[in-house]
Image 1 (cartoon, rainbow, N blue to C red):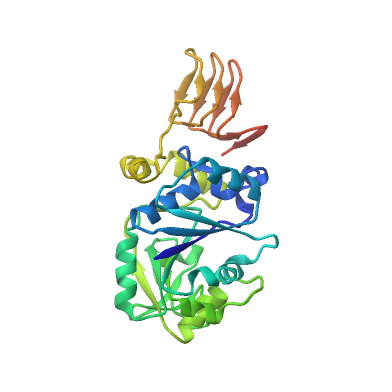
Image 2 (image 1 turned 135 degrees about the horizontal axis):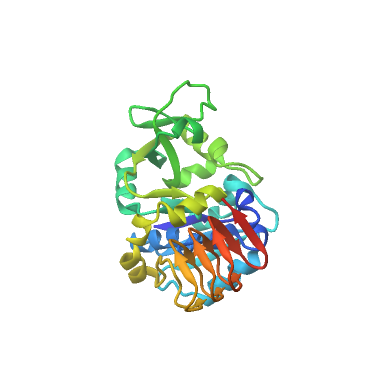
Length: 310
């Protein structure tokens, strides 16, 4: 089975971090967010991942030139004109039209068992199966309308009035039949492909009950790194075994003066922290510089001059 990784978005809600860095490379616990999805794919035995890119494509191309994911073959689909989640997938139909495939976002942090998702999809007899996650914030984020284990609506966009405690995780197994409902133009996959499956081949739901975190906003990103990071750090051995990259709080490639104090913070590779400085409950992206006797508190710091207090 192959996979399609959605990685072409602008990451607008993560600005200014994404002004110079594509969202898939924004690090979570010193691992590019995209790599959490690639880790899951490799652990599930996926052999090929097609990744669509658009925003700062040169940074992503450089990243893949410098990193080898072994048995996971990476195929890049660069969109000179952004096509959205629907159009971007349709552009790669010729690479995915011979079998079921996995669809996964590049901005989620999860320990999902993709093998179990694939097996649930095969039992369902539907044209697709969405991985769902229960949260008290479902109505705020976007509740999935369910009936008898089938997905029938999204945020009540289809007017069914159905609600549930579940949201869509950004992960699914899809039949090539979805391409019947997609066009070669800018479009969203929910309004086109998923709705088409609901009306025709059927769309099933699969509940994921483990770790799932979205880094789509600055606050979510900050909290994922610092406040909700224990289960992510516990992925260290699994990720190291699969992709050689693993979550950690302080990079061994950071330069930290002996007189500096680091408290409950994430420090990236190439960071420099001067003597007498205190960095507390903050995230320093790779290459960030903290001078002498500085106080960094409850902040995100990124080069060359990004400082966000939260």
